[in-house]
Amino acid sequence: MAGRRGKGEGSIYKRDDGVWVGAIDLGWVGGKRSRKVVNGRTRGDVVKKMMALQPVIAQGISPVSERLTVEAYLEQWLTTRIPGTITVRTEMLYAHVVRAYINPSLGKIRLAKLTPSDVARMLQDLEAKNYSPSTRRMARATLRRALRMAEQDGILARNSAAIAEGVKMDQREGRSFTSEQAKVFLTAVKDHRLEAAYVLTLALGLRRGEVLGLTWDDVEACEDTVVLNIRRQLVDDRDGIHLSDLKTVGSRRRLHLSPPLMELLEQRRVRQQAEELIRGPRWNNANDLIFTTSVGTPLNPDGFGKSVPKFCKEAGLGHWSIHELRHSCASLLIAQEVPLEVVAEQLGHASIRVTKDVYGHLMPSSRAKAAEAMRTVLFEDDVRANTQPSNGLATKLATNDVANSYSEPLTRDLVGRPGLDPGTLRLKVSCSSR
Image (tube, rainbow, N blue to C red):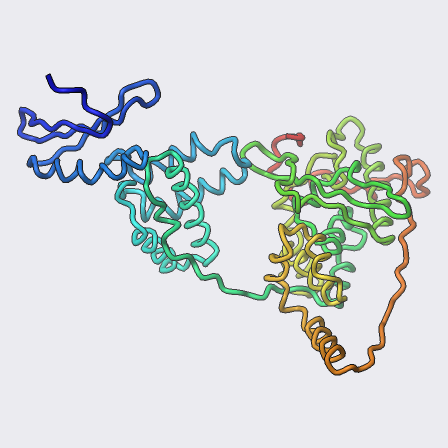
């Protein structure tokens, strides 16, 4: 009597309809006996397919169904594999990239048949449709991540997106304000109820979600200065507008406030407490946010961001985005010869390499100093050291009851009219600390 077949051994038989079928035993998978079935017109076709599968099975890889398409696999990845492992906003980004950029080119291809050439063709198609290098790069990166999970699950032997040639990124030099333009912008937002938000964005290089996610608990008195703890951001995703913790250690940071910034925050606290007194029961600031609508609800990040170009155009500066305020902060710091590692920490970059890649072209004076230093060392020239004394910051931020000592009457002109704040039109849910 023949012995039991071992794992990987198969059987070949002919069905009544004339189709040859081969079955390979994969052993026990998930408590059930698993087999891989192939078919062909002739017995020889089946033998070839089974022989091709043997090396794959030997590596512990479970052959993927021949009918599983890239689109079907990616949909499964989006709905069952990544939820809970990344932020909701990132989930939404991946879903958009898959459905808008990847599926139109690769969705109908069977996953087992996907090749690096297919991925390269997808990138070429996107380029032909005038999509930017960053969009093409995101499409490849998203597919690469999804296929890496297929590798980990043992259903693919190789990651075609990782093998395919990457997208060449153009090193574009972003725009930034000159010191004169920055002062014009500060004049344009002066006396606006959210003046402090715009000034902090420019002076500290904050992202829009970071500045809108600030709470009064984030303002901390520390010895002879006041620091601002950047810990959370305000996001708008399918869960509504809510607070979310910053993802990386580098993005969570403590920034020192200069006296003018402390004074702006004091003024902001006065105005906010006046708004609360006037609005009465309509006031709703559950998370004690620094920057809110005139009734205390969180601002919409998109609406806040779109208000920056409006101010810039009215001031005669042309069109500038809110992200260019952040870029301007870095450029102005470098122009003042602030060390690059300090700039990286200020902006919350993951590493100084990111800062160098983006802003390295703004440091010609540093390179000149390096050349001068080597000339001094090698040729024994005298060096005159330039030292500048540093002044400690001593101003303390006002206490919570500053509104009680405010001398001007609390009128509606001070607090503004409700419903006219940037980005309030689409606000449907209250802020939460999720």
